[in-house]
Image 1 (tube, rainbow, N blue to C red):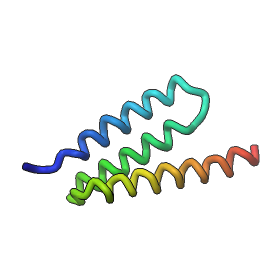
Image 2 (tube, rainbow, N blue to C red):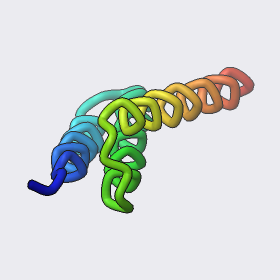
Image 3 (tube, helix red, strand yellow):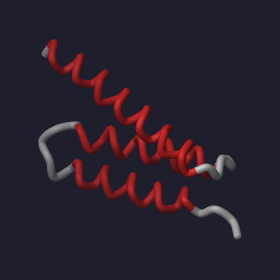
Length: 74
């Protein structure tokens, strides 16, 4: 059976990006982009859920940290 975790990552990413429209901060957007990055990793053939989750975590935390440092200046 093929690995279809990338579909779940896409659904999670889309749900988080849509949920961001109803909030005032930019936190859910970055986690949605992280989920889409994990979906891309799963789509290109990396079937390890641990690696997909690590990509999700690194991208999400990285984008959150970068955006916080930019928004603090303004």
